[in-house]
Length: 172
View 1 (cartoon, helix red, strand yellow):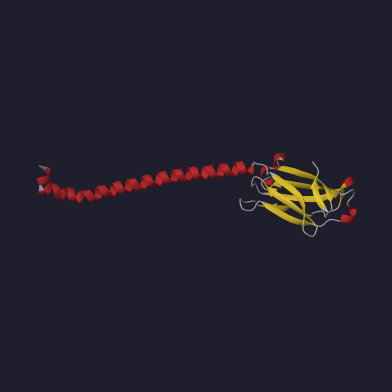
View 2 (spheres, rainbow, N blue to C red):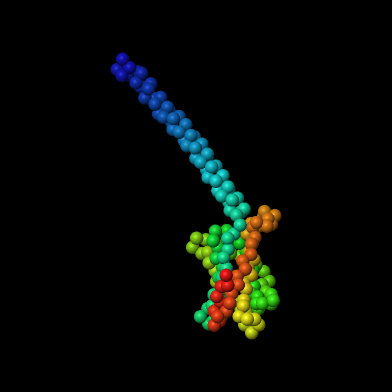
């Protein structure tokens, strides 16, 4: 009987550690293989999500509010967290610019916690005609240049306001 034969049991005792070493090596290699496959899949999914984000146009809202001192404040909000750059100006009737003209775009990098920005806007109130102002904001995805400037990745927000006691009220 096997369990009674000392010679066979001694031989088995010498072999058993090597068997478990080989099994451990096989399990470690298998674990590395599975980990590699999972890591490749995660990388693929991240690249796919990044590509989808790069091809998604920004959704931007803009508004004009009055500060406590009755100065005008531009409020810009990202609705879909796509990074973008923007420039804006304020005009009155007959396309007369009453705000400064921006020399460059402002970049926005929205996050879940930070998706709304405010900018105090200097305007020449003496030039406002019939209490009418219009905000014109152009924006473009920060990925646009990388994708050869597709028209779908840019947009424009135009908002019209009537000033009532110095406070902008949206028209339509």
